Image (cartoon, rainbow, N blue to C red; front, side, top):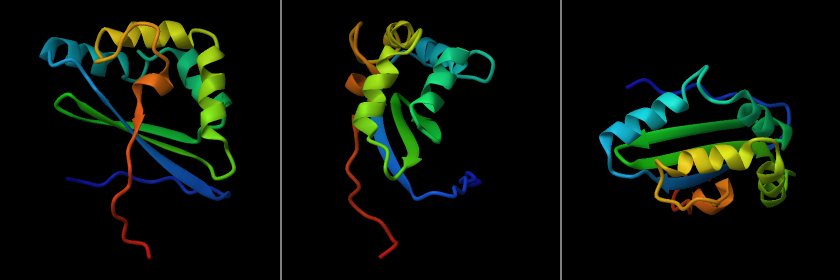
Length: 125
């Protein structure tokens, strides 16, 4: 398998890793993937993610497990950014729209659904 290219930024960056589980239904998973494809995801959602200061967001999938990787400026208060994101146009509508695929209830925000993962190893030091 090929690796994925990583962007370079002119500012110090922090990486955040979060996880979420999808409902175990192959038709729902296929639909979830389609709704996140280029041209299908709502532009307001993409604009909102950038507007709160997130530089990059990637979602990886294996079966029902999703892993989200966020990159943001090191000085960004991610909790505050996620709170702001929840107030932006169509964001909660999107979260409710996605809840049918996810093991999460209606009304849950992105922060409620996507749980932080703990890094248990890294090679750099």
